[in-house]
Length: 176
Image (cartoon, rainbow, N blue to C red; front, side, top):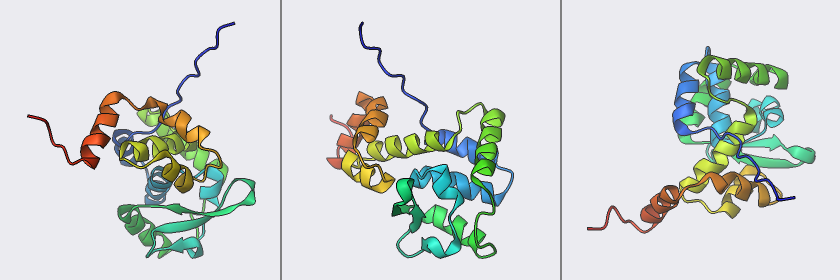
């Protein structure tokens, strides 16, 4: 039997992120969505975050990952501002894993965008590789034990994506 090629599952894009953020009903949901996109963390990791887990200067949050491994996840300055605002009045996100999944399903239904924590995890991987980070760096930031998943997710990159990274790294605007 010939081997069937595995279907590439959806990865959240920056454009989809903006649409999802516009459909969030509260600041907490916007924080959750932004942190998922910035860090690629799993929904169970997200639900257990407390204010004391953040290192605001470093732009990281300590999470209890798969297999009870403690690791750090990253977030952007923009997301850090949103998170600081939320956590100035709360000690946690005040939502369970099931609550986050329900919120994501609701957003997916409202926007027509595939919306799960794993679509954000895949989106984190693809977005970071498109920005020029090596798959090894993405593996470390995303907490994957094996590079195989990073390579699988980054298969959606096109030649134009690779060309964009090449030009960015080599400071080419255009050839003329």
